[in-house]
Structure formats: structure tokens, C-alpha cells
Amino acid sequence: MNEGVRRGVTRGYVFGLIAATLIFTAALVVMSWGMLGLLFGHGPIVTDGVPLWFGVFTIAVGLVMLGVLLWRQALSLLRGSRAPVWSIVIGAAFGIYLLWCLFGIVGGLQLDETWASLFAIVLAPIWAIGVLVFWLVLARRIYTDRPAPRWPWERHEGESE
Image 1 (cartoon, rainbow, N blue to C red):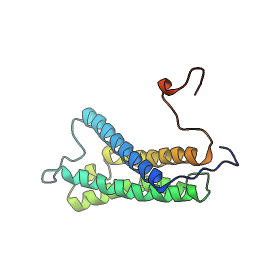
Image 2: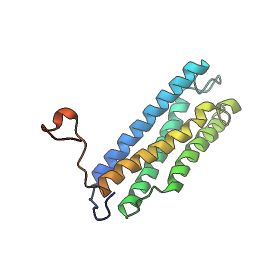
Image 3: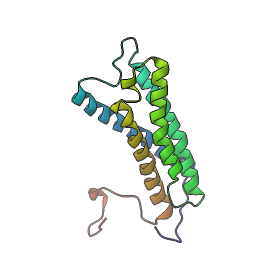
């Protein structure tokens, strides 16, 4: 990153990036839970009487929590910090794990579906990756003078990346 360069971004850009990060994070959850489901032969919720929407609701609440934390990460970047706020990264990771486990206990899930579930454990690195990807993209936009990336067919002849 260049020392002298600092570009401004609009609130709309930050909200759009937060939305894209939330979609990216949700896609990672679907992919990882799908792979775990294929591996183990069952989904994250197997307790009779607990509807599947309970898991969807819990992940939705976790995504809202992640959106708030991403906004705080953006504010830190816009205030001049050039490093990720590690308390936000760690808080997002542990927060989603605790959220899944505590909501699961309240909802009637068993121990192997909450605290000891690989489905729950995999959420922590996904949320941390989401925060770090958000930080990388926003930091590149604010602190570098590089233009937005373009597809190869968008470049003029002789122009490289």
C-alpha cells in the first residue's frame, strides 16, 4: 500500500461490499455444510421436532451480526487504520459459534448438534474469512491507487494487469 494515497469511498460502496461479503459468507456455509452432509450422511439438524428453518434463522441472525461487525471494520479502515481489527475477526468467529450453540440449546438441539458439531465448528473460520476478505477488498480500494480489476477482454491491446 502506498503511504500517500488514500481514496475516499461512498457509503453505498461500503454497503454494497458488506452485502457482497454476506452473500459470499452464506455461500461458503452452504458449500461447507453440503460437503459435510455428503461426508456424514446427515445435515446440521437431526433432532426430531426441531424444524430445518431453525438453522436458517440462526444463520440469518449470524449474518446480521456479521454485517454489523463489517461496518465497524469499515469505520476503522476509513478512520486511517491500515491493519484489520483482530478483535472483530476473532469476535465474529467465536460469536457465530456461540450463537449457533446457544440458539441450539434453547431450540432443543442435542450436544452433538451444538458444541460438538463439526457443522458448528466450521462456521468460525468462515466468519473470520468473511471479515478478512472484506478488509482486503476495502483496504485495496482505500489505500492503493490501482484501478478496479478488469476482465482480459476489457483491456486494450498491449495493456497488462
